[in-house]
Amino acid sequence: MFGASFDIDPDASEAALVDQLAAMNRAASSIAAGQVRVTAMLEAKRQARKAAEGVPAAKRCQGLASEVGLARKASPWHGAKFLKMSGILVEDMPYTLAALESGVLTEGRAMIIADQADCLSPADRHAMDAELCADPDVLEGLGDRKVEAEAGRVAIRLDHDAVMERISRHQCDRTVTARPAPHGMMYLTALLTAAEGLTAYQALQAQAAAAAAASIAAGHGCAGRGALMADAFYRRVTGREVGAAVPVALNLVVSDESLLAQGPEPAVLQGYGPIPAAVARQMALAALLDPEVEAAVRKLYADPATGNLVAMESTARAFPKGLRWLIALRDQRCRTPYCDAPVRHIDHITRHADGGPTNAGNGQGLCERCNYAKESPGWQTATVYDRYGRHTTELTTPTGRTYRSTAPPQPTGARVFTNDIHVVRIHAAA
Image (tube, rainbow, N blue to C red):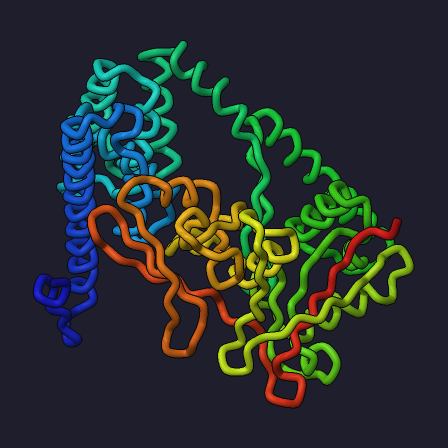
């Protein structure tokens, strides 16, 4: 469809290529507007069907956000956000939807406006919609931050109390999250109130400035301000110097060859993902040499053909601690496609009540949202195996669409100990 819509001419002039980029962007916005309409229509049809079946109103769209996320190749969280914002745009904000359809707004900016209008009444949403988007010139040249600021100002003017109530409600959402970054780095993000976040940021800036001044006075080179702020943050949180061995629990999965024989096979750091073998060796060595850190090695085995961690089985209904730990190591992140949330629940793929065993083959790691979604009527999960024999599940939604999820590969080597998996558990000494 894309190729039929846009014939890319390799001999086109630079100006023509810029024009084509702009045309493609307008087309992407138009498609996004179509997705908004389709999503709102899907919700309306699901509501009507479930109402006819006598399902209580609160449960009629249970699991629908996850279906939307899967169809859009996005996480369930993004699916829920898109589902909610689609309803607001279609029902209460026709000018904003028209601006998206014509390419005046990008999908992201239309969602920002809808999100700012979320706390308002339908009448106030209509008023915001007309003020911001009835005249396309109002939006010309505005980036994401400026669109958010303008929408926020209008929302406060229309209903100050509703905005303050939302701010108060969202203070309960304060949290800290972690996600991998490229090149062996990690994003550690804190969601704070505006006052708390600004205070913390200014404190880190002040510490970085002091560290830079001290380094220059001592005649040493000075790292960039960002690196100095990161060092100050780490010292504040952990109470340890940068580069010291970490006295908290870490699970490092690495082959014998990579750990002991300078092998090149990457390791897996639980909660992060693949890391170079050299970095894994540095972590293990630092733990072993630091007198304040106790390191233990636990040997597991992987299937020689697939690299899957060996199965364990229990007669209990709930997964015991060791088996939960093994499945979490194998799956690393929520097994629902496109969901990168941490594993919170270890779930029976075939329900225990239906005869499903409590073992690694019938277990999968899921986040809370995905585990609750799959318990909704019409969802089915089955264990299959891909052509390499890796642990794979097939998730079927109430509309009959099927999605596959395969556990990530574990480190393997090429010599005698290729199938030995070592887990280095690093924790504080008693």
